[in-house]
Image (tube, rainbow, N blue to C red; front, top):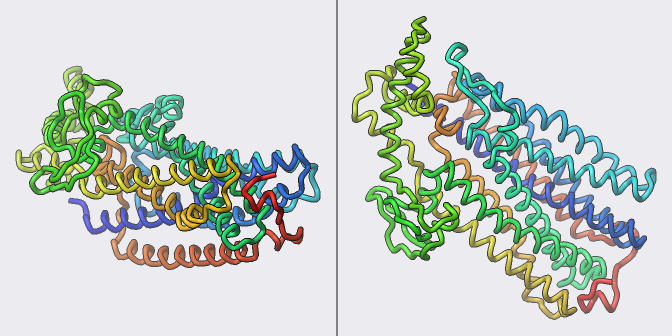
Length: 522
């Protein structure tokens, strides 16, 4: 029987460290490309103000980048310390994209980030721009390979279980890289990072404009952020729709939990805009639905039903029973009986072997499981609905608010009437944290919605942990919280320090102009 206290604290530690780390990642992903845009304008026009923009925002990028590296390293070590069986079972596959990320992307961005800061007077304009581009490319390639690994956990293609080694083995690296879940997660995540960085630059620039400081600098930064942010937030919304379709194809339980759909909806299915999930009664109270929309998002059709959680539990119970047959055949194969009948029995049901492993939470002998234990294991395949339901809706609500801010910002810039819109500047300033909140909620939806699986339909989470005392994990969790909180405080202090100093601290003077004060970037 698994030590459920160890499982819970191991999950908590990974969640805390991952969410802390992702406070730094989005700004790195997006700000690197904003630096490319600013420096490109400097190279094309020769106007020093755009060089100063790249240097000032680059200073803030550097602070954030250093903190992101420090918090990210511990995540990979946890696979060996806290999730040893997971690493043993799927390490041949999961380790490949992580190794490529380290060898290709991390070294690329880490090498050129130094040249970015110390190469302004040593490289040509074009040479330094190339360095800035490679920093941005490396940061985004790093995200690609990490999300390829994560996408495989959500949709384990390109791999097969080997009963002789009792491990998952790689069968096709191309399938893993081109996994539709991984690709969708990558473009959605990096686009969210672009929105985060754009909102950061937009909000800080708004603060300068509200204070009447460095107006020429601020309005140009505002313009870059407004344009880049508008394109990015539109991408996030479109790619979010694509994510819904991907989830509808390969993660039907997650989709039903996000929508709090207990009963199968006939086509075309309606989407739930608001409701109060009641998990005990398996219903959604006060539901407000919009017709057809869920069917269009999740199935791209008007004739495909959306399976509800109650029916999905019944399907899970049937797969558990099939998995028990596969498990029995596996036991015979391991004992040396490799007859044709045994091989055939295993091959026919091997895709359901992971479901049989869910029974190990309730009985050490899977083959002796009672109908009640099968029912409980099937119920475990449904994650908690309320956290997913509300996390998703808050995330989407924030997304549409950010869309409004970027549309309004871009529109007032276009008509050269930004300065009088102090309400918009204040809204942009106070909205700086919103993309981070949305991004964290997005990860909660993605990872919590996968439970009870570490590898979807292959390896349950409770079987993935290391054989260590739970007290060790509690101690390291406490250490991580103290250390990471310290890093977060340091970053906030440094960012606020240099933001208060402002671009004038670069020594190029104040950036005021009548045209800029009217909201017209020159």
